[in-house]
Length: 226
Ligand SMILES: [Zn+2]
Ligand SMILES: [Zn+2]
Image (cartoon, rainbow, N blue to C red; front, top):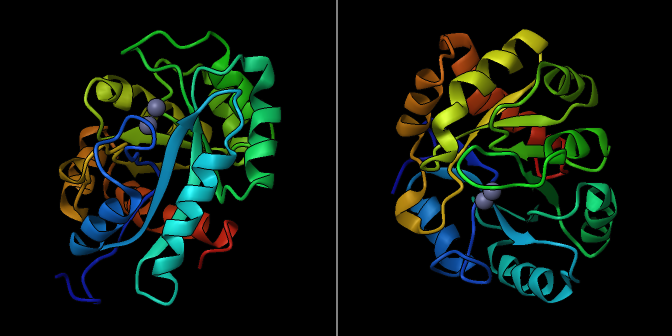
């Protein structure tokens, strides 16, 4: 078990068997704590359907962690919803208890509705754009203005464009974090691996630290979790 003085790890993107992950939220939180995480968000996939059962289930599991040294975050990853409906889907999820709303961005690894990146960033309702793929400069600038965090990912294939995302985010002044998008405990990133992913995306030391420590702490504050 990592000691509390070990450098912290924060992750805002992971899945459970309630969508396409392999284990429960409880399993993911238990494993993340053992790896030294201070916070892990469960962000299962939703579309335009009613997320009430999913969120109710996750929020009930999260209750067991109140008062522990792990900050659990219950959220959603809006996935392949029509771009024009992302804002409405995000608002509804939040009303139903989602503590973080992220959007499944236009990864180059699969087909995602065109315009998803822009709709997420422009919505004013989304905290973080996951694996934005070949993000445009304009959308990177809008993300900086709107305070939408851009994700560098440890996820296979979605990671192909990490270097592009990191470069545009830096140039635009947008915030970057490093998430796992883990679908099972063995896909969670330790602090050391997260650092390597950030460096591999082309970030230099100060920006690596920002991406894996100060930006996550600011996001936790914004979410009311710190
Ligand atoms: Zn995704
Ligand atoms: Zn995901």
